[in-house]
Amino acid sequence: MERPLACWKGEERYEGEVLPSLTIILKTGGCRHNRCRMCSYRFERYPEGTDLEGALLSQLHWVVQHYPPSGVAIVKLYTSGSFFDPGEVPPRVVEEAARIFWGKLVIAETRPEFVDSERIAAFISAIDSGDYPTPLYVAIGLETTNDSIRQKSIDKGFTFSDFKKAADNARAGGAGIKAYLLLKPLFLTEREALLDMEESIRTVTGIADMISMNPCTVQKHTELEYYWKRGGYRPPYLWSVVSLLLSAPAHITCDPVGGGRARGPHNCGTCDYDIVKAIRDYNLSGNCQTLHQLFSRGCECKEEWERVLSLEKPYCMPLTL
Ligand code: SF4
Ligand SMILES: [Zn+2]
Image (cartoon, rainbow, N blue to C red):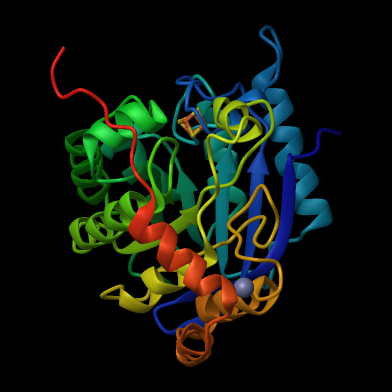
């Protein structure tokens, strides 16, 4: 039997309530774009010629056996690319996922070019039990609302206007929108990254129903790792993460993967654990009191962070060719 890349049960905050969730990362035919500078998920793919439909159905049945969905309210479906790319996840698999997760609130990740309102509507009618007004949220890794940064620092291959079109298509099909934003992609100073995230949160609020901020981590065998190994990149400070969460106009979630480690968002090593824990607690409670306390108490490294914000100089890119 095939296993997914990862699968775990947890909890998610949804409309003021904490609900039991199941997260599944399926191994698929792989991301069609396959070139973002910080991404190693794209290497997780079956070789060409694999019976994708059979392999993916087998993974879904493994999930049902090992993580029975009864009692779960929210199901988060990720792939090593786009759940709604029929070349990556065959339609029969999408149908089977809808059958298995009928009655759940599903969040499924995809690139914008695969958001087709008819397919979205068909998926919703297959999972909808009437329990949730919006049974599906289409999650898109927008990363930033700034097209130049998305293109030059990430090489994401789509524009903000593509994202907005996809959001319209998802809504036309009856789905909600979740946007993932990336804090501090390659080539940005800490301050540029902070300003870019503030601007992105402001701009995408009102377009997306849910916003999740991902502080950048250095994944293996990526271009980002190449620069990091040569001292050309530092993941964001946890102080940047906290200050953004505290100043956001609404509750945004944040999973500080690798928090406190050299490859993940980190401070000095002494204050990291408490901050990462407070961020995780804030995701569920929506109460930012502990984050406020930690931020005002500070640490020796908070001055370092402030110095970095004021002194770090960007390596400018030419505006013209
Ligand atoms: S970040 Fe997403 S779109 Fe970019 S290569 Fe990775 S899986 Fe593909
Ligand atoms: Zn510290």
